[in-house]
Image 1: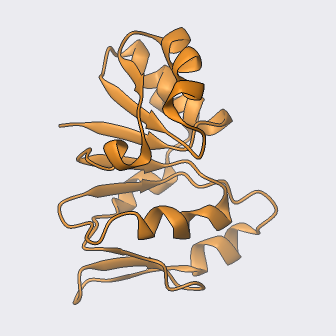
Image 2: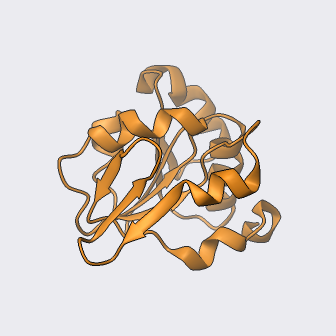
Image 3: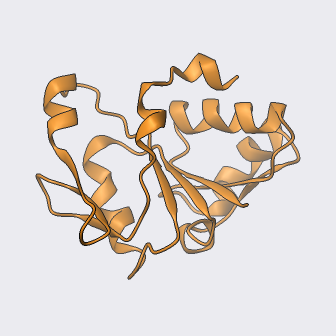
Length: 140
């Protein structure tokens, strides 16, 4: 099983620390080039490696830790998300929780998880609903 975090701000880095504490190999990517992320990734631990978005999206499990409006660009980065497990940790700062939850929908018949307001699809991705209630501290 391979893991990647797309987004390397406060949420992405906090999650990367949790993976590093457990000695789990992790790829991190963001809008910044991998060379810019590499020093921060190395400082977290030897199991955390900065790569390009394209390389990060090769992982089996992808954690989205991008600002709320940026998921669309990530969704377009792969023609098919078949076989990927996507964990949504997008930053919905400034968006009410009820509004945020209502904007996500899953269409089991077509195997598509997509953001309802934009139509940005993660075609065939699995979105593990059970993880949406976890607190970040629980991962540590």
